[in-house]
Amino acid sequence: MAPQMIFVNLPVKDVSASKTFFEKLGYSINPAFSDETTGCVVISDTIFAMLLEEPKFQSFMAPGKEISDATKSTEVLVTLSAESRAKVDELADAALAAGGTPAKEPLEMGFMYGRSFTDLDGHHWEIFWMDPAAAQG
Image (cartoon, rainbow, N blue to C red; front, side, top):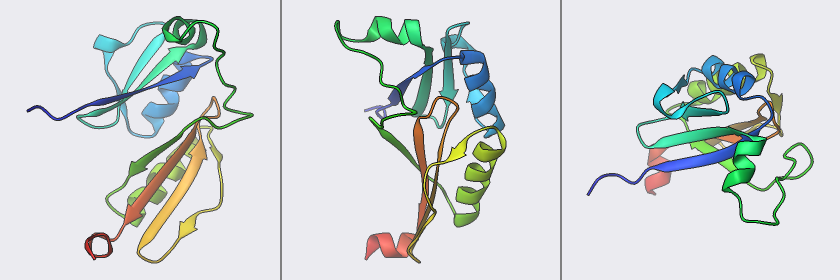
């Protein structure tokens, strides 16, 4: 059985700016699933963030629903693991340098470390590392 994939669809105001933001974090954009209104951010072999300009995002939604304003409310926390504390810092620092903003204070628990940021449209991203030995026991 092939590994299951996830496509997180996010509404964005400016797909070009959003693609540039994620490229500055070290991710690539899959051109086969991208156009002037859509950007497919490749996070891993099985994880993708689909950046959809708001009118296109709206076309996928159930009738009568509104797009949430992620700068005013939180509907989802997108959480990604990192291979080390240094990678957590590298990704969070890159997000801040690319125009993101800190979402909350870093999480420091010894065996677990995390940082968070919001992207250009206010979507909340969490990056965390957990000591593999602590995770097993």
